[in-house]
Image: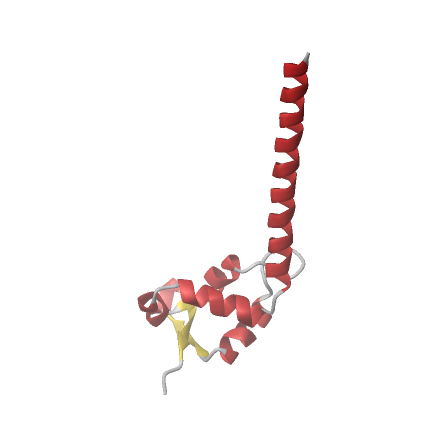
Length: 109
């Protein structure tokens, strides 16, 4: 009987540790999502190689990498404003039959 109680106590402790870890991860995710968009974007730009930034970044690719404040992805207008504050500029290109393309490049003055 005592072996069963020990096993039951170990199971309860493992379950409590798993729940505490999940709670900490959820808290960290909420804290990250509620931080200012500029800070989140600055951290994201630190992970993107410089060569890719020189080739241009699409708004949709950046938007899918950043969570919105409440749900889903961040708003494109807010992302554009944050990119401008970080020194990026949008360049639009019309490519004949292939359509419209807008990429964001870092301003180098």
